[in-house]
Image 1 (cartoon, rainbow, N blue to C red):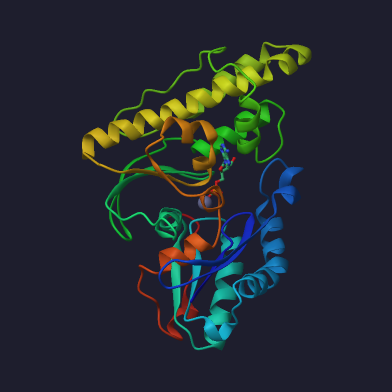
Image 2: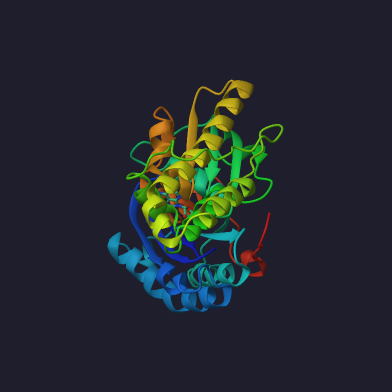
Length: 320
Ligand code: KG4
Ligand code: ZN
């Protein structure tokens, strides 16, 4: 069995999976409420909370899988990218567990983890495929040629898609993180009510900052009562523009690469309109789209483990 640990942002997560990708447990303790009043993740607060939560979350993951540390053959942990203090809590925990049992450790890139969410049972996807990775921190198009073998085709020039959702939600007076809430609100709105621009950037890159500004201007023109009245329309139109931008690029990339299979991963893959607009795409179940440790353990199936005790010197990295 593989024990996975993920602490790159504001989710403290641990999971146990089998070597062939069956999920034994997938425990996620979200800190979202803790950070909500600040309107975003406060790194120092996140690190401290990870420290409190990581041991109980690992214990719960083992218990839920009906396993003990005796069953664990390798430990997988997110090494980066993410908040450095938050990452270090997970990395130090993973090192300690692996070292105490003389187990090998697999440091996992968080983005590769998102891609590996597609390799889990019961319906594992096999490379090659074209993958859109859209999360709070990243928006990338990847040509996935094999397990752990990705070529970057395009990325965002400014905000990530999830960030655009969260910033839009904030302008509409929704909570943090607002992506899922904006998604819900948009269901009651008219997506054609507002004409929001889809940025035209060359190649296969993305840009979302102009869209966010357009929403800001649209909300500014409204009184509070009008805003309350038009919120669902604004949400629906804004969401439509983000989804259009993403889908357009996925289609461009599929044309260029001739990819037969398209997949979407990351928190934004949970978006209902995006899922509906790409009905043929491979999509992980919702719990595997947002940050979790099962995907980290999954990535560790396809990476070389660092033998005991060489991993003790490993460091986390904030960006790629
Ligand atoms: O992958 P993830 O959990 O964390 C990062 O690695 O960033 O992605 C979180 C992002 C947030 O920006 C959140 O608002 C967004 O995914 N998100 C959504 C939905 N659910 C989560 N965005 C749009 N619609 C949703 N249903
Ligand atoms: Zn993520």
